[in-house]
Image (cartoon, rainbow, N blue to C red):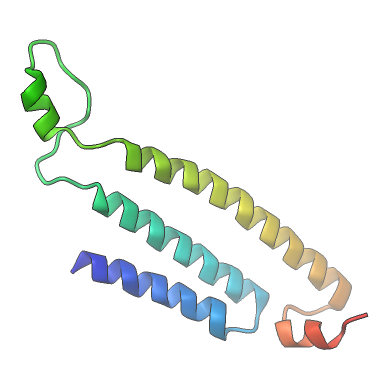
Length: 115
């Protein structure tokens, strides 16, 4: 059920990227898609009843390995959030420059005003 909600969130963002003609709405669609992917990766790594992956003194290794949650997907998502923030800042800067040059955020109007 929750994976379906991640897919729905991704499809909402994809709709915003494909159908909308305003650059700001396209950027918002990209952001929604990014966060849907982040949520999916975290949900895939979720383990019911899992413990923090820190081995405590006196704890058996076999018991720890069976219960510990894999921290790698969480680290990958944190890294992806930082990278996506940089990409979003770059895309917003490009949108601002396009607005300064053409005076509009409409993609169709920008294509028509080439030159």
